[in-house]
Image 1 (tube, helix red, strand yellow):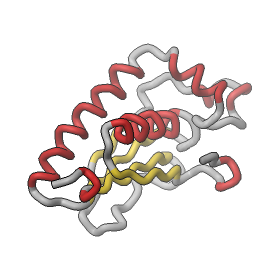
Image 2: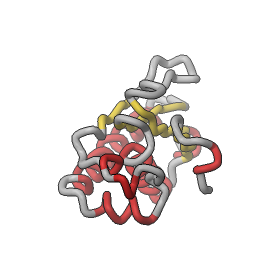
Image 3: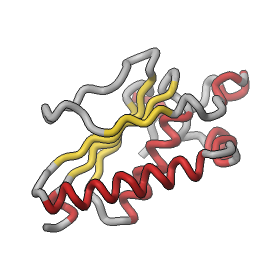
Image 4: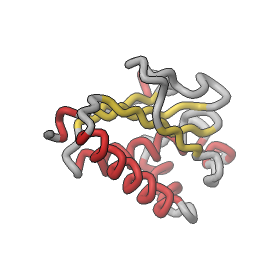
Length: 138
């Protein structure tokens, strides 16, 4: 089975805003990774109007202790599961990253994760649930 037969939907969200996203495919969800243990740039005034898509926030989060091992582990885990899903002819997997407001940490983590899966050839979609449309850059 080819990788493009399995689609992985990736979401960022805020636990205190939208809450854990519902699975639009009716499978009852998938992986949910809690990013609230990571240092929060949103607590600093300079970053409050920025998102995990902004270079300043990206640079800040890249230096947070533990973030790279966390993200590499999530990538390894989901890739291993996705390969089994393919063998079982599943067509969809949902992966969500949550933080307090869905603006900084979860957005950065979802972007990092999406890039990891793209490099491995998986079909993905990415949605930042709690970001205003005007803040999202493609």
